[in-house]
Length: 199
Image (cartoon, rainbow, N blue to C red; front, side, top):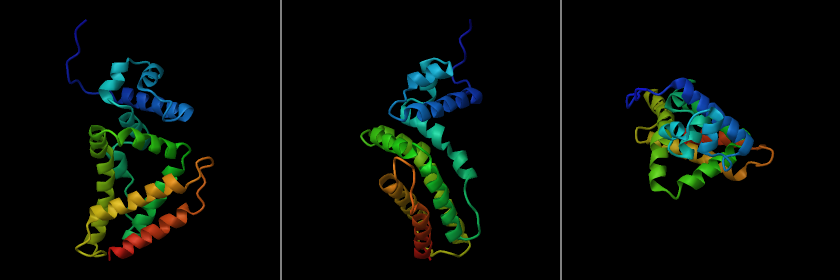
């Protein structure tokens, strides 16, 4: 049998099958109970097939749960004002954090990534940066509309909003029920505070 050429394109259908199996595994076993070996078995592929695509579990889980950069761009709001756009962003983020198991998943990801500089750098490049850049693009659109001051750093606005939402939901949401009685109010006040502060 001929050896397949190196660098051949990835199979999108196979990628999606692996990602779907990962989501099922997370639902069944949580982040801590998931392994790349188990994902490979459930997807009917060899371990190396998974490892070639996602060398570490956090990378696979981020793709499976949060999607890639194109997913982020497709979700960008454009409602005509910074306040409305940021309100939509906080609403979307709150919806994600309320999904059962997501907060434990994020805690597990952070626990795996924080001790390892190389893994942190890869996660920043592949996942965090596209999301912050997408949010910064919303702020830049407001600048073009004349809504915010020239000295406002869009990247700072993006990090402030995303960081505050992460802090709130990881520390204050109810882990057992997923309930968060003041999450919507928190997001609304945060969006208003950030948009007013940028004027």
